[in-house]
Each structure stands twice: as C-alpha cells, then as structure tokens.
Image: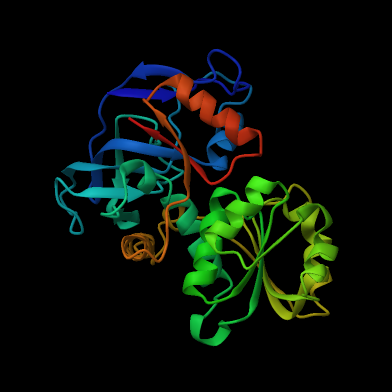
Length: 337
C-alpha cells in the first residue's frame, strides 16, 4: 500500500519533512478492523508529533502519523463483533499505533463509529478527534449535565479552532449552556457565531471583554489554546465552585493553589487516554462517535470542515501542516483520497 511518513523530524518546508513510500498492508488483530481509507483530516497533534517523533534521529522505517479517518471495512479480526466487512466507518485513531496517512489502517473496533450517513467522506473526516475531545471534556471531565446545568455559562478559549468549533455546538445544542467563545478576526468571529456562540469575546483582552459582554464570572472554562498563558485569566474569570478543563498540556508548573480559595476543579483531557491505556470503558469512544453521527444526521450538529485538499500526497500533507502551524486556521482541513 501507499503511505506517507517521515524518517526524521524536519521543518515542514524541508523536502523530506514528508515522504511517500510503499509498505505492506497491515493485518488485523483479534479486535481490529482493516479499513481502506477514503479521507482524513489533520489536527494540531499531527504536526506536534511530526516535530518531535524523530527528533535528532533517523528512523529505519518511516513513521506514519495522522488520526482522523473515514473509510470502508475490508477485513476484520476473529473476535470483532461490532462491525462487518463493507461498513463505512469513522474514527480518531490510537496514538500508539501507525496512523491514517496511508491507503489502509488497522484500528480497534471499540474506538470506531459508523460514518454519519448524511455527510460526505471529507465532512465526516473532519469530526472524530475534535468531537471526541470536546465531548469528553464537557461530559466526562467536568461532568456537565444538560438537566442540572442548562443555562449556565461556559467560556471556550479558542472558539474557531477544530475542537472549539464542535465544542461550541455541543455546549449550546446538547448541554443548553450560554456559550462565550474567543476570537478576534472578523472571519473567526463570524465562524464562532455560525457554530452557535451566544457571545464572541476578544482573547487579547479577555477579562475586560468578558465583562463588557455582561459576565463578571463564568461557570465553566475550556482552554483549547495555552494553559500557562491563560491561567491567571481563567482563575480570575471562573465562578466559585466552577470547573476548568484544558487539552493543551503545560510547559511549566500549573499553580493549582490559586484555585483553592474558590474551590475550583481542574481537569486535563487527552482523547488518546482510553486507547493508550486500554481502559475498561474504551468502547465508550465508539458509543460517543455513534451518538455524534446521529446528531449530525438529524441536523443537530454540523460538520466543521472548512477546506478540502484532493489526493494522498506528501505535498498535500505539507500544505495542511503549514496551514495548521500558522495558528490561523478556522475549523478543519480534510484530505480526500
């Protein structure tokens, strides 16, 4: 099969930052699906792994990255029970295994969902990783309850990005929250409003902008940009007994003691936790993806796809990574094979 990978971590402008090569089609294990991939999308985790996955070394075999994918099940492992050959599926992958930047991929059936019927393959490819991340952040980490928390306020830092775009929709349409999202450019402000944000505030002057919108404090905060940079701002804006969650990690120590006086809870979210550690509830990711597919098919949610590139090529992946690394992308970028 054809695949695209890298043997050393290079700047994306370098000729061999991605290389095309031929490799053996993988063989599914006990609970694996072999998927013939038809479309993928790219996420910030892609370029972050590319930048460090072979730093200061040269790999013997190219590393294949990429996680979001849509495709058709071509073969199944002997203990697969959730899918059949010929099923159209979508998923966000497993960071411990080879990625989706290839013609075929094996994937554990427990973290796979049925492709939304109403979406094109590229529209569906834009969804899995960001939807799982947003869903887990809202409902698994800070445990928002649509019944108990309806009408409460949530601040989403990074509203126009891939995760922010679907988080706005989930927070508004499913949780029933009043959604405040950050953006600063006219096109990102409009995009956030299109996703369902009730208010869009300027991340450059976040505290004053939130208060000018009429909110002294908010019940929940989701950080999809930079935990360290926004830490003191989040501490100031969060209500007593509120919750903060972040997906960004931290290069420095996080001053959790600043949350004590207000009795604030703080959570990290990593979408790859369930697959990496083979958790007892690993199958929950497939369940979430099926719920999201139903919500997309009935029109409650909409795809966050913004741009589509055509062809599984090194040049297309380079272009997609360059766009992501600029920090100015809106929504998601897909590649249709």
